[in-house]
Image 1 (cartoon, rainbow, N blue to C red):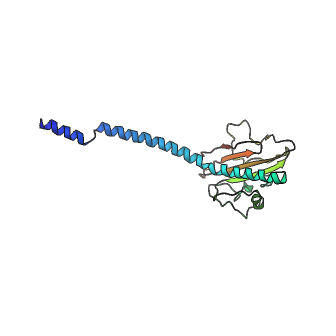
Image 2: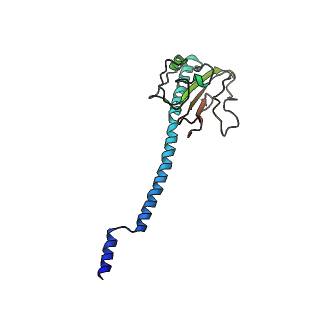
Image 3: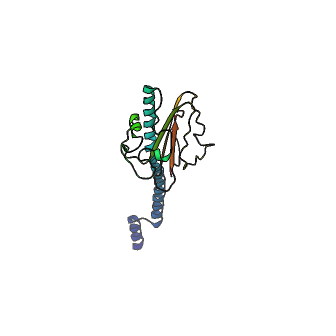
Length: 196
């Protein structure tokens, strides 16, 4: 009788092995779900900067057109990597947005684009009138899921002004670029390799 009472008291004081295993399993499942959510959050945060800056560039282009009746060509007709602002190259290092040493700094200042701090991505914006688009995008992009490069036939108005804005960055330094692109004829922003 005494041993039965002792066992009951002992059972009331602690957890059984099965109960502990169930709790550990539940904690493991919750941790796995949290990790997946965190990775998605970090991936979306990675392209938040270029999306915001590109919207600022779009706004600057539209303001310039309202005043001058044309868009401003800030990258001098080339989307080559050497013309990308700021810093001229695309990599994983952050660069200050204000870059007076950049060859097209004056043009970028005319767009009046500002950022909250340093940026990881490089930006280019070319503009023109009519269908005379001859710039080619950065060759490091693969254009997955598209029948052709998005700028091979941008379908600009025959006599109207247009612009193209492109951003690229290599956030983890592995040589795979994240690409973002928009034009005056697009309502949104195309991107690929956002989780690079």
